[in-house]
Length: 93
Image (cartoon, rainbow, N blue to C red; front, side, top):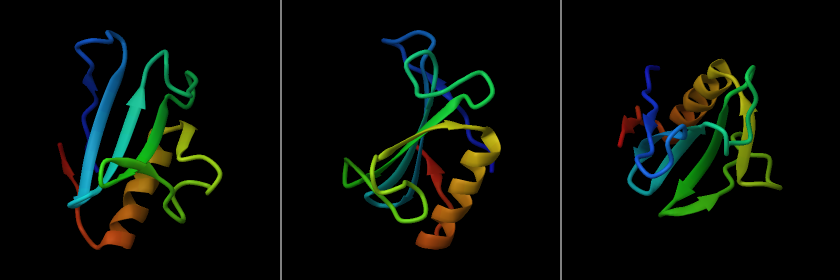
């Protein structure tokens, strides 16, 4: 899936992409110096349910709603899993 990272106006160097699968279920993908990330795995994700960070089985580990140190392939796999769970192709917000 193609997704585009958009730079935060108030935080130069920080980027985010938000994908909505169904109303109230979103995946936030961030990168930049404040993300839990590295050069090799530059992305961090969080699932939101009705505007609140939430765990989602198969996506987050149940201990932390934030999952960091992810590659683009890792994020693409999460998007595919969320598609399988929701049955909906996401749209970028």
